[in-house]
Amino acid sequence: MAPSDAQSNADRSEAFSVYQEGCPARLVFERLADKWVLLVVRLLKRRPTRFNQLRREIEGVSQKVLSQTLRRLERDGLVSREVIASTPVAVEYSLTELGRSLAEAIEPLIAWAVTQIENVLDAQFRYDAQSGKRNG
Image (cartoon, rainbow, N blue to C red; front, side, top):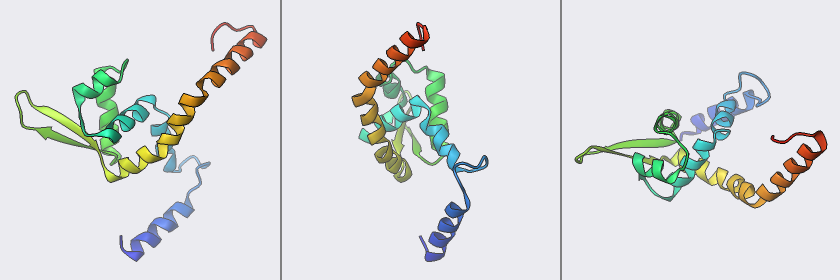
């Protein structure tokens, strides 16, 4: 990246506040709030993977939702899609450099979720018991 490009990016990032409605960083938040994005990115961090393998490994995701998720990630520059000439034709997905940087950033979030789930479930149970609710 040329020095002027770096300065331009720095100027742009300082011009936005994540609390402002029009802040483009909210796009990233929207992606991160999607459970399928987190799971797809984490799987692709390990290795390039074909569509059907992703679908088998991510229990509960429909073909339509996985396809939409991958398309959005590709549009955002996080995932690359490669058509493999075979019979039948196969498509393999991998993380771009930008996608790999996201994968590194979300790893602590995933680790937190795994280690804290019992505390979250306990808190939900206590809340529901106090407010007379059966489900959250």
